[in-house]
Image (tube, rainbow, N blue to C red; front, side, top):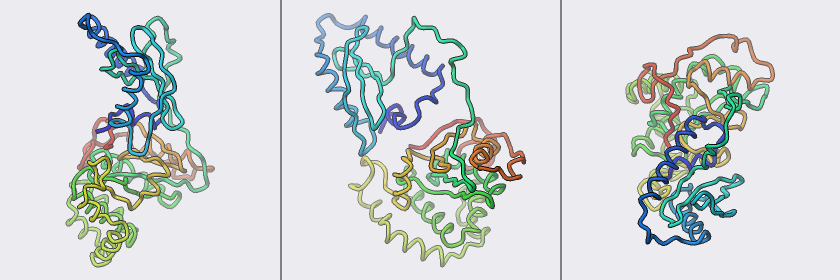
Length: 334
């Protein structure tokens, strides 16, 4: 399974909380200090190029996402380690490797002699989004992802408030992580939106409570014949079930593909559930409350409508099914 750091390479690194970086740096170099102090004196060191190539091979084989290749920019010796500079896509990243080529630290070090003024610490702000007359809001989820469900609970009140002023919709990540039931539910929700969009949000408002899809189909008065025909046609077009049955097609050999929105996933670089896209830009919402989500959408209007003056709940819901309030985990299925 891919490590979080190398997934995060493809996102905005400036959003790391400084204190977490500090703790990570202390942990990393504390570990290295212990290892180097206890290293047997006969341990053989590798050359810088040998070490860098070994680290690069490991990263490309095990850590980065499918279709992504990390390349070496340069390698230098620094403070008893090899410091390697990598390029992934258009971004560069720094990692450290022990001289024996055995331990990779996927973090840039902290200079303990450099003081950081308090005013340099970034504060949490509402992310900037491109403006338009009618913002386009896309939420990518996996239907059984706990964090996707959490954000759908955030999404629904904002949708109800702004549905006539903005284009808002729920889409699906192009792979699944929660067994066959997730494929079935993704197909159900896709087809309800396609065939009876006006009923979809009634269905979703029910589904997020306990995942009782049969009950929710009845309560939302979904036309099951239309839905069934759509599911059959969609499965034929995108080969959803056949790909599920053929493990050779699975992403990294672990995750069945769900290609219904594959083109949009690739366009926006969707990395997991949830991913929020407003006017073609991926944005983070924190805390995951209806009010915060509404604020970000309203900033995307050239001229915010009067609905933006209304206040929604400032409380984030808990991940998973149910409508309990919870702490904002900021988690993601990926």
